Image (cartoon, rainbow, N blue to C red; front, side):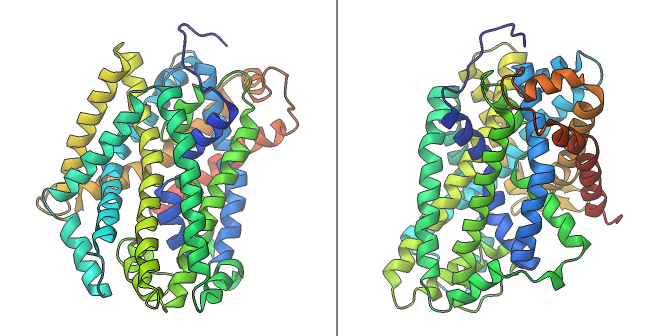
Length: 454
């Protein structure tokens, strides 16, 4: 594996796992996974999701690991080096573009989390469901407030990125990931101690396969893809900082385990509290920002001080999860700009922060003050979400699998998988089969399903 320049690396195996897990663990686990499980049969969805992570998530993650470490460069250049030039390098450019666009609107949602920490702390989230709904609508459509919280969140990510791989990303991951687990466990314990919590536990762990149809399978496939940050450039960029000794398959397995654990803990945190106060588990995407503030308030009526603390901790947890993912998204564009434009990391990070803040401001304004800002009947915010999530991610992931499974030299892929013969290659055959056949077909099904073709 050749390197033209000295490149930063993660300093430890723990740093590799926590930083990459931080990239994968985000709002997709704490926000999206619970409401997806709620809409699709609880435990039945969870079982299918775990299977999807094994057959789709891990092979796709290892594929990005191989490309990133082999190229030892930003995502665009890593694909170019693996391809040896030619049109396949543009798959890498697509990954950078996807990560960049996601950064813009993801920062807006992250800013909402920050506002809710403040709202929970000062007590402005108290009220009935209709009040909380009005609170969310008023804030998200305000012309200034969500932009300020979005900029504050980007500034936090910027602060980490400019300090580099070891002193910034790795050090912060070692602080934030344990904090995320501590917050999760505290809220899980509080939620499971509520009266009637056993109904939520039964929903989460008792499969109802009668509700399973093709849509549930495809939804689980899509969630595994979204949750593990596949095809956003994050995994490939972080892998470029891996050492030659990093066991790629074991790392992907451990990161996927952390990802699934966080998702299940999120369910343990939300469903016992929701069932305790009679809230339907299929409340959809509004579960976190509209339904849960009222749930916490009702669930801890007898202990208002506990409800107050739990509400603050929950939105702090959301903010931590959002920040770990935003840092990895920011790093995709920063690494690309630093290496391709040959400028310093602080300058590259500043450019990314400023441009994403402007992009995020337009996305935020399209939800309120400038409702007409958008295309094809979608606000700019929804358009960014649609284009990246339903077009760029599945196309990028499918092309990555085809590229590594059918175009790249099999010997190079095997050498990276086995660390040049120093670790076991027992699972290489299964990995390569999934990469060639299972993953591309599964991703194609997701893509077609999202457009109602199947």
